[in-house]
Each structure stands twice: as C-alpha cells, then as structure tokens.
Image 1 (cartoon, helix red, strand yellow):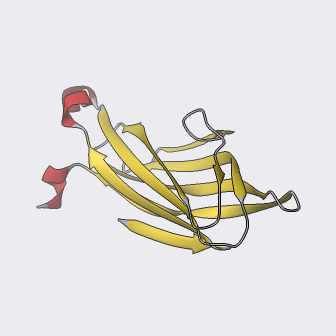
Image 2 (cartoon, helix red, strand yellow):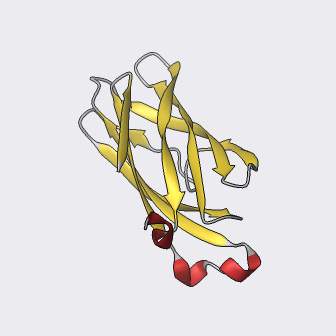
Length: 128
C-alpha cells in the first residue's frame, strides 16, 4: 500500500492483479486498485475530478481525466473517508499510475489539488 497526504487529505492505494480478466498472450493485463480517501482536515470537502497518468513498462503513456470517481463526486466530512475500487488495463505485466484529484472545500468553495501517490501495477509472477 502507498499513501500520501496533501492539505489534510490522505490517499492510500492497494493494487490487485486480476488474472481472470487478463490475457497475456494478447498483451492484455488487468489490474484493480482500491483507493481510500480520508479527510483529516477540519472542513468538509468534495471530490470534483481526477487526472491520472498511466505508464506501461514498454514506454507507453496515457492520461485520463474526468469528473468524480466511478460516477460519483463524493462529499467527505472531517474525520470520514471515501473508498472505491476501479481498474486499469496495461499492455505489459508491469506499469505504474499516479495523478491528482481536484477537491473543493465546501466552507468557502476553494479549489485545491490532492496528490495521488505513484503506485505500481505488477503481475505477481514478476516479483520473483
């Protein structure tokens, strides 16, 4: 698990290789990742959008931007967390992701970015 804290918002990520959805013979490797976003600040916040940078070990790079996460723009009260699971497919059995969330502090509608720490997507057989 990797974790980072930006402006009182803690982001933790776990990854899981999904062999049942992968097809290595066709260069298709599927990974799931679980994200926990914990509001450690004194203010309610809302996740507005995400911006991902996705890197394959063959040198390919992708960017993905969009509103919310898995169709939601959650409000996270102080001391609470929002957790979700999503996925990413790669053309190789190793890669990484990182990015940022755009948040709004509801008290004054101030926008700020929260860093998503870089995490690695690695098929377990590569760990030997």
